[in-house]
Length: 392
Image 1 (tube, rainbow, N blue to C red):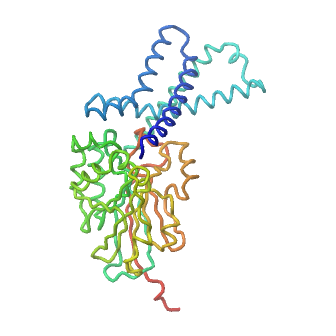
Image 2: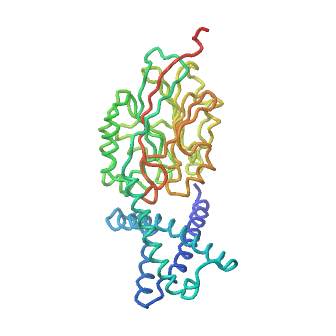
Image 3: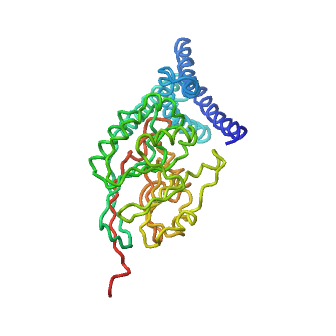
């Protein structure tokens, strides 16, 4: 990505972030104007919380240290708090504007605005902290989602096949080795034939990850046919070469616009992430280019991190596409947005001859909480049955 593109992108993000925080700050200040002490505490605490994420991200690029990790953790939680404070403040303002025209609120609410604002402030804090606490509990308790898919092709080598598929681990400061080891234990308990990572294994700048070697336990993954992965947008954000080098050291085979046919006849197609052009100036290969030398009767599985162009797989009769990226919004109400952007934001659908599964992911990005779908590891049971041979 060119410098001016970075500058434009971060200017927009920073502008939105600053505007949202300013709106929350001004509205929240009205709740704590009772005494100078409350007002001072509120102002200082708000500044620390709202600036911590930016400070942590900047500091980690200079030095890997505990202060940077602490600031990232504080800032990550603030991102979640910010979302739900914004929702509550907007709802309160909508009620107030509506009351201005319709006058339905009780008289005591309008006659004592200072007390009303203080009460609303305390209630809002309690509600938001409960939401974030529940979201945190949800985020650290993944489950196994099991799906069965029948592929209408012959496979001379096997009739049944088990895949453990994971997307969006975001290994780094927030999702560390403890959770990674838990993921590995769950995967190995599944006893898969094959393990597939659908991108965003690493979360942005891999400096802390590499220095602490958080991913060394990935070598403990067990699958007779190996562990394969594709790049996601976050591998590019943090530096694609460092990310690839580190993952390959953990005995993970990266499929970067490349194809591998397994000993059991199944072909795995790995696409470079859609953002490779934006970050690396490189146009990824088309599916026709990737499959031109593949036996059309071979069962095909496509790994493509972002489920943005499903017609590419459908038009080329790919049997199964596995994607992630969306997190299904991760925080309510963003799942409504991802559901509008992507035909499949989360779950399994068969379109034509192509099965598509989009995972909501294992880890988190930004806020370390989930208030939409529960984090998951996906156990895929594949069966093969050539319907064309059926006699009627």
